[in-house]
Image (cartoon, rainbow, N blue to C red; front, side):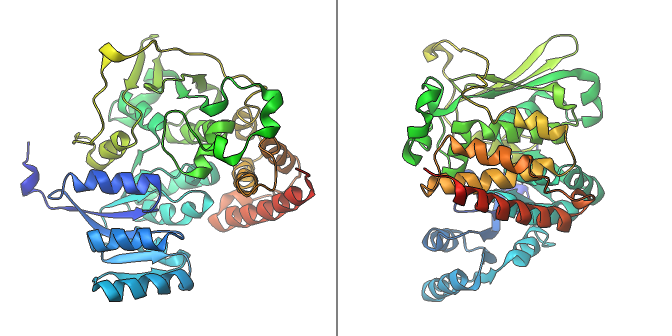
Length: 401
């Protein structure tokens, strides 16, 4: 094996550096300074946090969404004497993701906003670590075509998809011959045992208090509704080229078994570990090797019973929308994602109730917002996304808390 010290450092671009995935990525990188170099970082609104990352890592570029926040970061960069060039706007995100000097792109921007830069990275043939599930939920076939055409290496970072990937051989051409179906595990979130009749009283603080994982607010709410698992079903269909019915979900409250592959011979392959996102991040950074992640070792002697149970349709009505949209008109998964982003934001801002998130999602799917050909291009999908968001905002305004 080649010693790490003799390797040329891999230049890394982190899209979404101030979120939980971004900060965990930087933590893993800090453990391997001879192996990786931070080339570019992006953030949404946490200027001071991105500034701290820039001061620590001295990236070549930093990108903020608009000029106002970028100006603040430039001021901090000048005060600190950093070498970092501060850019702004959606096009700048695509430029750093596709930059010729970048080797690895961590796609960790939450929501549909991550589609364009992840697509740019795919088209440029990068090693793309995909934590932004919406890129595949929104883009689907279009995104996978770009990965193939660009010669990119696509590595899933969601713990469930990383688990499936780790259970499969490196040669993807053999997967179809091996897989009967896959099983994505889900913790069930904070309300797995709560009476659904009381869901109207759930607060944002309660929904964001995940029992096992430390995550951002949006994905924490998605975990509570199980919409995150619905999006992961859609993502898995594209990542592993499976029929929708080959993707199944089971509740596993302990979050130790991260997902499973059921083979044609009925063998079951599973990946286990402590619930720590640094494990899939480290695997994506080093694949096909493995490097230190910083996660705690799984201690089997201290484990309690590992349990599995079905997902209750009354408690998690949004989960079934995954298979419904995969079987519907192209673009339906884009509609579901956009509607859910608007609904979750409205809930977090206390404009709708927790139980009304699903109501908004269902309403948008039945609205007939998709025009023929919209799912065939990125511009068409982004136009559909904008149309759904406007309609969903209107629906939110009509709901009474």
